[in-house]
Length: 181
Image (cartoon, rainbow, N blue to C red; front, side, top):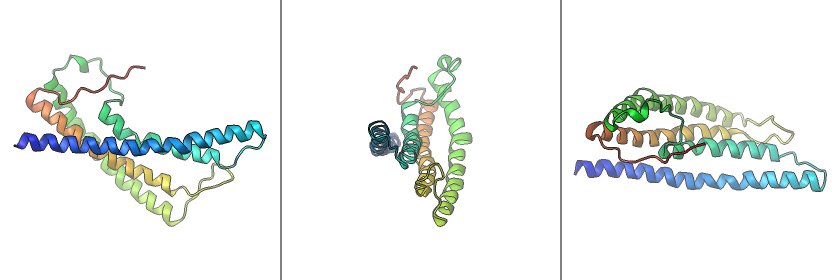
């Protein structure tokens, strides 16, 4: 009973991360459109836009930040595996449990509160970008940072639970996709 509830919590968090990542992918639309329009305007009419650089920076920044929880789910973050591959699944679970508890989750908590305060301040002063002449509002991008911390914290809880499972049972719940460059 306890193990089925435990596993259900993990699956629920993982599904939420996948759902959020599917929404985040929509940020590709303004990114691609802004770049395509900029190239067309620049080379077809010799008339570059004043807004495309801002849209590109904001959408790509948000895309990469908000996609980080999905990368955590898939095991795509950097890990030094010189020694890691030699460890047993139980030892991997113990090491990951300790690092999630002592470093990752506290860091995401601090990042959330600091960036949320920064977001509220940017919103209150209607902060604007000074990247180009267009100068759009920047507080939505500032709001992406605490949202990213929240998504990473949530997925970190799932990864902690998976690590605790491995530490206790010696069995990994999921095998991450191996990504080679």
